[in-house]
Length: 296
Image (cartoon, rainbow, N blue to C red):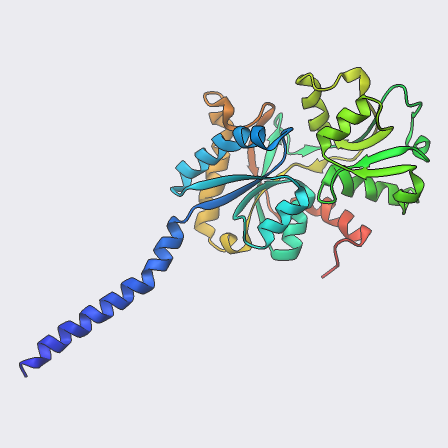
């Protein structure tokens, strides 16, 4: 009988130790840094990191977890990193988001606002010496797309060209290249390219920053309104409804905070608004029409 209490205590200690060991990974996981991927919105990686670091710090403070920022220099690469678990949170272009949603169930939680609006436009630009006045004048000319993860730089103009019967741009244009949005505007304005695809926010920002002159960038086509960049989370994180609610609240705070903390977002960005996957249907429809996405 004397051994029974001792055995019971040992059992209790063993059970407690086992329970602690099982709980430790979960607790550790809760405190692990959140990997925050951001597309290359600025001219270079260093400036991009500096621009979005205040946002990462705000999220870290509100979520109670370290947030590790990293710039991913292609939209396609950012979509893949969110899909394969290298990234937990991402501020990404609409097409990149749709790719990550389609391939791995990533979910948008909020959309960024630009001058108070959750939408923007794809555009096609030329320079004033090109002689190009309409899209019909582009045949046989040099043309630049963005990378194939870009909404305005590739998906939407390619979809529009398809509707015009231009199904093989490489044969329709004299020369085709894929490069970054800033490079497209710079090279078109300099007359090194006849035309290229971009988006109105980038063109406006480059003009404001003195990177190109407005008179050297002529818009010859503009799309219907497109949903702005998505703030998305991995499929795993999205299952945590409480976390998603905290994240959306942290993002919603940013708009009012900009008056006292203007560096939280780049100039002209005015906050976030909660949105779900339905908001990105126009992008998904274009991907399906091009056959890049397969209907499920």
